[in-house]
Length: 187
Image: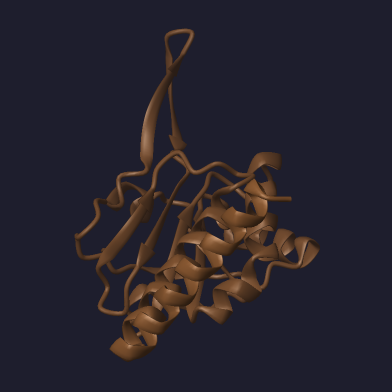
């Protein structure tokens, strides 16, 4: 899946055993992330880090969907144990992960095996992918996405300001920078 492409619709079961469709979120931004399974310690770190940032995702009106290869029963068990507040979706047959191009074959000691390439996407209100994070780091991916969303929000807010307000703020910023520079050179 590449930036600018239409996100592929899917229908999967979540931790409440309810069917969730990507098309249910048209009109909302979506943070969609893929990982291997809920029982993997690395993936649990990723899920917990996303959960820690969940209030920020809500603040920017972004729905969060995590897709993995675990069964619905495994997802139910782990989501309650880890207190996951967003949708965890079971893709046990790997159809969605294949469609998104994150189901990859690897070789270890000459033996092939399949894994989920840890990837995350931001999808806009119309269903278009507008940001892709390949090789998403379990420790920092959620924070990177939130920082990107904050930057986008600030840009959007700046665009809404009247021209005179922008000019006033730029002048004030220039004056503040000049005063700070003077303080550094003349203690």
